[in-house]
Image (cartoon, rainbow, N blue to C red; front, side, top):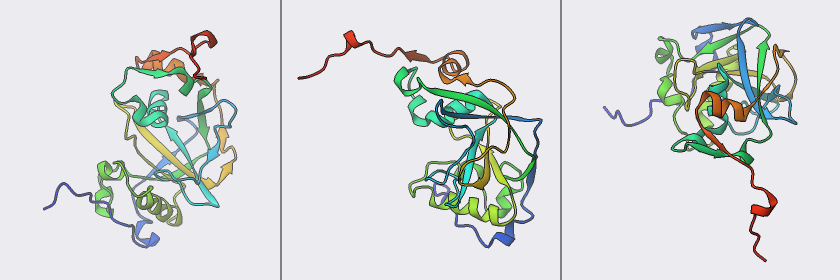
Length: 209
C-alpha cells in the first residue's frame, strides 16, 4: 500500500454526503477572524483558498481561538521564526464573531474517512490551487450543509478547530461581534510568545540613489 500518497480523491455526487457527520454551530460559541483594520471581518471569499467556494458563493474563514486565527492567517511566516516584522501585521485585527445557527459538515468526525475524508490529507499542502478541497466544499454546500469544520494546518494545542461558513460572496454579517477586536500584534506576543520587530524609522532607512 502506498502510504506516502494522499488519500484525497475528488468528491462524488452531493447526494452521497447528505448523511455526512454534522455539527451544530450556535451563537453561544465565539469564533475568531483575522482581517485588516479597514476591512470588515464578515467577508465571504471566493478567491483561491482551501475551502473557498467559487463566485457567486464564498466562504467565511474562522478559527476557534485568537491564536489559531493568527496562525491560519500568517501560515508559513510563523514557521521556523521567533519574530515577525511589524509591517506585516501593523494594521491587522482579530475580531470575535458570534454566528447565527448553522449545521456544518464535521471533517473531524471519526466516521469521516468512510466518506473519503482523512483529516490529515485534506488539511495538507495543496499544489493544485486547492482545486480538490474547493470541490469538496462545493459538494458539501450542494448536500445542504451551511459550511464545514476542520482542524487548522498550522495551529498547535487543543483549541485548533477552524470553521468555514458558506454564503454569498462578499461582505455580509451573519451574526454579532460580542466584544472588541484585538490587535494581532498582542496575540503574537502574549499568546504565541513571538517578537514583533518594530517598524523602521525614517532615519533608519538607507535608500539607494
